[in-house]
Image (spheres, one colour):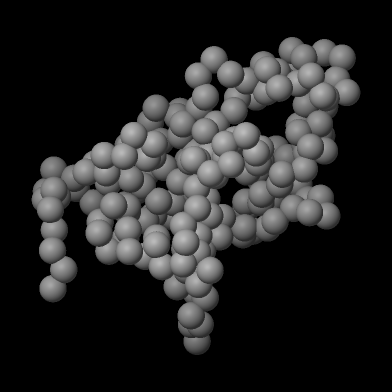
Length: 189
């Protein structure tokens, strides 16, 4: 029997509709880490910070060789707390404060996780984000009713292995909606 919590969108992808004209969210793909009566929280996974990698923030790390850090890019996770770092990662890696989104994906914000990634003992898959997206209670539901977002299943391939410039298009494809047949304005009966 389904419960009310089964209807929430934790672990799903939000895909910005073409009509969404907000500079921050235009063509964004957001992975939802939490969604419930108290609101929602997630990370944009397709907005890499240009010319900025983890090595640019590495001064406090106890690391001698920064060459591995040049491979770890930072993403604009969202407009809330833009200087706070988070690591969206594969769930095989766990620390005491790791938040388990589902069986495949987890979320950490501990500096130890970044150190483990640098030393090659961290999660197999990861995406480092600065900031996050948040919605107040019922705000996301309202935006969904206004057709600002499409919802689709999340795959680790989309999250971690798809080229950032292709994530929005690929996520749109996964919704199975033909945008050529989509009207820019829709109504609700």
